[in-house]
Length: 635
Image: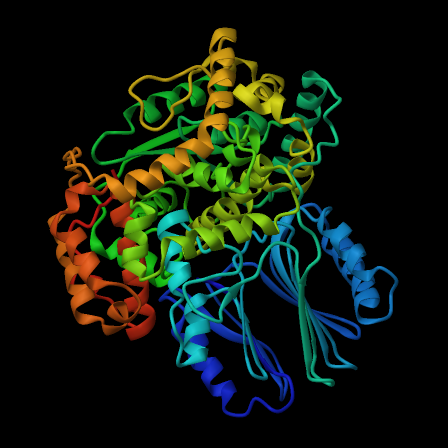
C-alpha cells in the first residue's frame, strides 16, 4: 500500500534502526512503487513508498516542516499553508483551546489526509488525520521506539517479533473489522478519526488522543422540513463533487444499479462536469440487472457508459490484493483489481475515480429495524440482523469462539464494552454509531484503499459539510429513503423513477419503500411484544440448553466453493505454524471438510485471515502456487 511511514526514538539516536526502516520501507512496496526518504534526523526518519503521482507533499514553512499525504479538496495551497501555520503556532505554543481549534478546522477540511508537522527549533512533532480517518493509519510504541505508517506490512517488518491478536481475529470474522483500535497485530493500533499525536523529542514524551467524535443522537436540523433539508443536502453534495474535480484529470464514475453512484452521477450532471462511467458484470452473470439499471441511468443523463464482463478471479489477483492489504480487505473482493485494469484500458492512467462505496451508510436510516432499548438487545441486533446483510459471513459466534479459542462471553463482552464507550445514550443510536465507526470507518475505508494502491479514488459522500449536515437531519426523514429521493429529485428528477437494484434480486424495486400504515402498526405491535417477552425468552433458552438435547440439524442448502481454494487453504493451515498457534486448525479442517455449510462471505473471510497470518509471518504465500487457479469466492 502506498503512503508515508515514520520511525522515531524518544530518547536517543535511531542508529541502525534507520537501516531497518529503509529495508522495511522498500520491502513493503509493490513492484510499481518507488521509495524515498522525505525527512531525517538522528532521532527520526520519515519516508514514503508510492507510485508516481500519489499525493505526498513535503513543504518548508519557515520554522515548521510540513508533510501532507492525501488531498484536501476545498482549500487552495496558499490558504492551506496559512491555516496550518496558524494551527501549528497554537499547537506548539501555549495557544488557548488549540486542540478545539484543530477539531473545528478538521470539520472544515474536506478531504482525506494525514499531516506531519515538525517544529524545527524545539524538535517537537504534531501528527493528525482527517475527521473520518479516510486513510487507514497505524501506530505502535515499543519502549522508546515509535512507529507510524499507512502500511501494515511496514509495521510488522519494523517490529521484528510480533504476535497476532486473537480477539481481533474473532471480531474480523464476526464484524468484518477489529473493533476500536484493534488490528490483526497485537500492539499495532489503527488510529481513529481526528487522532492527534504529540511527540517531543527534547523531553522524550508522546501523547495520543481523539479530539473529535461524532454523536449521532444530536439532530440539529430536526425541526426543518424534508424539502428544506433536501435542498441544502443537494447543494452540499454537489459542492463536494465540484471540489473534487481537477481540471487536468479526466473523471470516471464506477456506476452500479444501486443508489450511491446514481446520486454522484446526478450531481456531476447537474454541475455540468464532464465524466464517463464504467460498470462491471460478474462472470456468472448474477449482476445482469445491475448492468441494465446502470445503462438506463447513463442513457437518461446522456453520459458515456462503458460496460464489461469480468473473468473468474484467479490467484494472481488474490495474491496482488494480499500484497497490498494483507489481512485488511476480504480477498473475495480481488475481482476489483480486474475492474481497475479495465478502467485504465478505457481511460488511460491520468484520471480520478469516483466511487459510491458506503454511501448508503449516510443517506438511509440506520436505526435498528426493531425495538432496541438495552445494550444486550443492541448486541443481539448486531449479531442477528446487521450480520445478515450481503457480504457478511455466516459463522455463528460459537464457531468463531471455537476457531479462535476465546469464549462466547469474552467476544460479546468486548462488543458490549465498545458500545458502552460511544457518546450516545440511546442503545438504538449506539447501533448507528457502531455501523459508522466500526463497519464503515474500518471495513469500507480499508476497501477504499484498494483503488488507491494504483490511482486516486474518492467519494463525495465523505465531504465534511455534506456529512455534517445530513447526519443532523432527523432519522424519520431518511427512513424509507425519503430524504434520498428528495435530494435526487433536486438534482436529476428523471432518475427518481428508475428502480434500484438490491442484493442481486431479479427485479428492481422502487426507491421509496415506505411501508403501509397497516404494516407499520403491525411492526410496532410486534416490537412491543418482542420487548415484553425478551426476559422470558432468555430464561426459556437457558432451561432448554440445560434439559433438552439439541435437535438433529437440518442440512442447509449447500454452497459451492472452488476446489483449488479449499486445497490452498488446507495447505496454508498445514504448512504455516503461526496459524495453528493463534487459531484452531482442527475447527478449520472441519469447516474445509464440509465447506458447503458456509456461505461465500464466511469462507472468504476465513481465507483472508489465514492468508494474512501466513504472509505477514513468513513473507510469502501459498497462493503463489495458485496464481492461475480459480480462487473466486465471490457469489
